[in-house]
Amino acid sequence: MGKYAYGQQPSDLRAAALGLGWLKGVRHLKSASATGSYWHVHREIQFLFCIRGEFTYEFRDRPPVVLSAGHFIVIPPSVEHRHIMAIDPAGHRVELLLTPPGCGRRAAFRAFPVAMQDELIEGLLSRASRSVPCDRPLQALFAELDSLAVKGPDCSARDLALARTLATGILLRCTARESLPPPPSESERLMDQALAWLEGHFAENVSVDRLVSITGFSRTQTFTLFKSRTGLSPADWLTRRRIREAQRLLEGTDRAVSEISADCGFSSPDYFSTVFKKQTGLRPLDWRKSRTAGEAR
Image (cartoon, rainbow, N blue to C red; front, side):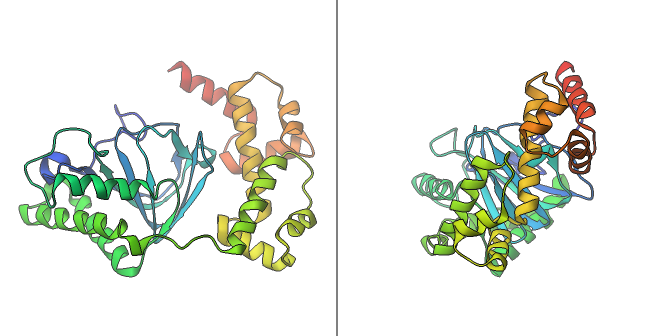
């Protein structure tokens, strides 16, 4: 990362080389190990496709979103976000940064008229902050664009022409009316209700039977649908939510660890410390010190 702030590293394929006024850059994002994640924003539209792994994005003003392999997510400009639990996990994504509609000077090379560019980018923003599945042909376009981003400045003129074509095709495909996800099913609606209930009661002694009663399904069906909706079991979701709240309190207050433990729903400070270290790699007080040290720098 060096001199660049988190999330602000330059793209592998940059706007000047791509020659598309609406595409500010393409970046190959692949890591074998987890790193820290910090709250940040982008001036551009951040458009991410997951090739391998699972990434959960959390936002200041909206529910978290799980991005798994074969899906894309669109994060609007100036929306503050980070990876959940402040951990950027190992995995593989490709990132496109797009100019917001009506913003900035358009380059001479255009794959389609300016008015259509704005229409397409606004269509992309209509899918913002949710995980959208891609069919196999679209996944192949993302993967091929990523393979060109790996080359970075070593891309030939032919490679760059192909990158322009792939990016244009991806934008067209991802904003086509027929590619819109279907409306939520009854089971998805009930899962959303269950998640909303958990969000309001995560610090309490949550009963699985209560969660099952909200959905109206059997215990097995509830667990299966919950994991399909969130990528996690109810217990794992609850643990991560409690840890996120504990991180917020550790960072934003000087309250004792024992108080935070109780307020976040843990049975004892020792158990809280064990779970916290398992999730973050640090004990609660060490994590608080690391955040304080980071702010001091």
